[in-house]
Amino acid sequence: MSERNNYENKDIALIDILDTVLDKGVAIKGDILISIAGIDLVYLDLRVLISAVETLIQADENAAHSLSSEQFDSEKEELKHVTERS
Amino acid sequence: MSDLIYLYGIVPNHPGQNECPAFKGLDQTHEVYTLSYGTLAAVVCTLDGGEYSEEALKEKSNQMEWVQEKAFHHHEALLTIREALPVVPMKFCTIYASRSSLTEMIESHKEKLVDLLARLEDKEEWNLKIYCDTAKLKEEAEAHNLTIQAKRDEIATMSPGRQYLEKRKLDQVADEEVEKEKDAFCTDFHEELKAFCEDSTVKDTWNKQVTGKDVEMCWNSAYLLATQDVEQFLATITKMKEQSSPSGWQIEATGPWPAYHFANLS
Image (cartoon, rainbow over all chains, first blue to last red; front, side, top):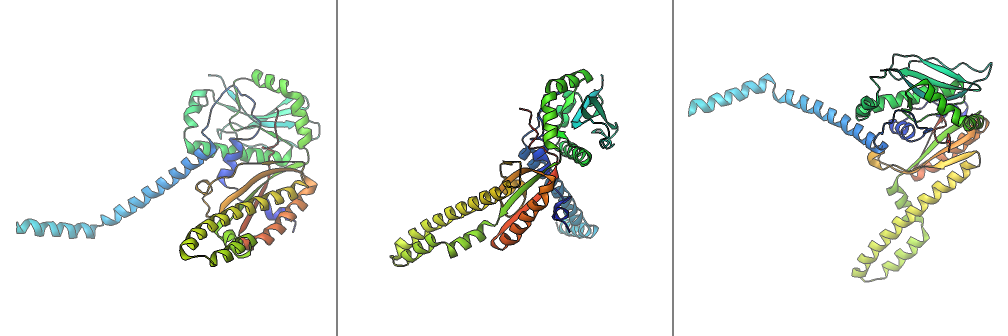
């Protein structure tokens, strides 16, 4: 097998792509000018975004778990207990 | 609002050459097409003037997911074009308001673009990154480095209080030695690879926060080489990978890339 086959079409990290297309390539002034934050910022922001979503999902799962009907019932039971005694 | 023109890159325009591949443009609606300028052609797509106005783009470019998706599209588009034809890749989001201002740009850079395309013909860009396990390198350095060994023998003869201080100093020496070794390893290998290449460039390394890896990036570079030299270039990398991985080095090569790092008009 050729060496090329070992390297070609390997998964390329997103940061590699951002690093080259946001920063390199021929920069001729187009008519529309936009400025994009530095590549590390874009990338870190993305990662923060992804991890924020993950945390949200996790929090959701935890919340769902703690609000299981079983727990709800037992808490209700406890409350009843306390109110009846007072 | 009138339509805008998104420019991906410039390709040659000669009779009998490969066709520029067809695919959907940046907005996933309009088709990509070429505009002829003599021996050059511009690979472009149409964008809706309202949806992609400067103001709208300013808004969009603040949304990281949009940037990610569209930058990825830009890169994929250039990869696809590169498979068929040599291409001068443009930076992400190079957009013209009219056909006439695109024409004006191309006409004013025509000579350089023609030269650049001739230079990029039958060439490939490859990128290299080297990572290292610093803790492992330090262990090795402490075990094998003569300067460190001599210092350690010297410390063994000292009073306990002195020993503590001197050990801390020795630790610093070990860190410095590791830094030197990293530098030497990477620059030596870079020199070895440069022998196969027409051009090369050394880039900034990224910190762990950005790479998300537990090993440290200590080298980042790009190479432009003739297609016929790629096998040998990669064989050299494979050999070095095998040789150096037991001592804690990770070498990653990716390509072929559109010649982003070597397409320069200035």
